[in-house]
Each structure stands twice: as structure tokens, then as C-alpha cells.
Image (cartoon, rainbow, N blue to C red; front, side):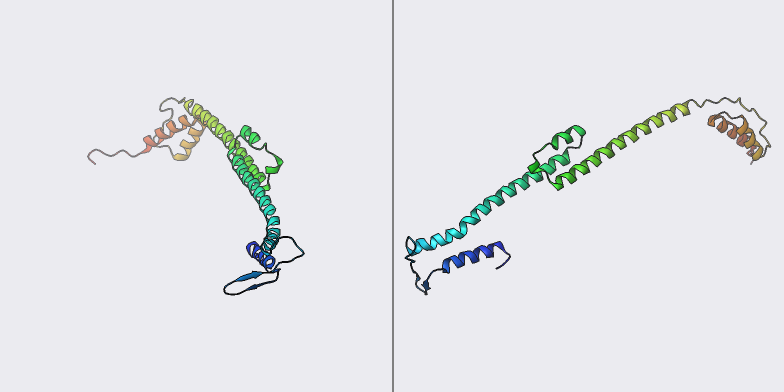
Length: 194
């Protein structure tokens, strides 16, 4: 017997057809009747064929039912996959046990991870926004507090300037102003006519 279901059915029908005495020529098929059974030879052949086909009909109906159940399971996976908010996820996962599957459970776990990552991302975005606001407030509060030309910068070496800037600057704005004053005072000025 072949593993192919069509071949198996063909073989069963063939065996049912030849399970009676008959003769086949180029011009005729002759079926002999079994007088122990009711009906003529053709109806007896039909009965044998029906006996092979009837069990298959119930198997086909079972397979149709199973196919419909799998179609609904597949649709359930799609619904669960698209339900990526806590409320919609709860609603989508309420289904008959008949339609639950390992695949649907896997999709639900993936959706849970997506929601978790989205929540974490939103939380981090809020933190970044808060930090940016604090930084902007800090930067705007950086007023210059040192007076103009508070040191005699001309001719002063960089190490001494750095020490004085570090000591007297209250913030980065002060440090920037003082560094600019030192640099301006120590850039060689072009001579007239050059």
C-alpha cells in the first residue's frame, strides 16, 4: 500500500471491484452475481464500492471540521497579534479553549514583550525630556558673574590663567568669558602697515 491517500483509496476501490467473479474483454465487462446476497451483479458491485467510500465520507467530515478549527486558530493568532494594548490584549485572549494553540500563546508572548518594550521606551523618552528641560534650565541660569577684565591677562602664561579661571569662575559662562579675555589679551596684534 502506498502512503499517498489517493493511491490507498484507489487500491481499496480496485479491490472492491475485483472481489467478484467477472470477465473483461475488449467489447464487454461481465459481472457475475452472488446469489447469497440480494440485488443484481451491478448493485452488488455498487454495495461493495459504497462500503469502501462510506467510512471515508465520515473521515472527510472530520477533516473538514478540523480544518475549520485550524482556520479559526489562525485567525485568533492574527487577532492576538494586532491587540497590543493591555486592554485589547485581555479582550483578544478571551476565547474558547478549542481555539487556543501553542502558536497563539507564542504570539501572545511576543505581543507582551512588545508592550513591555514600548512602555520602557515611553518611560525613557519621558526621562530624556525631563533631563533636557533640566539642562536647558541649567544652561539658561548660567549668567556671567565675573566683572570685565578682572585680571591683567596680557603676558600671563596659560597655566597661571587656567589656575585663576578655575579659582574665580562660578560657572561655565564665567570660565568662557575669562578664557576669551586671556586669549584676546595674548594674541599678537598686527603692526601698523602689515
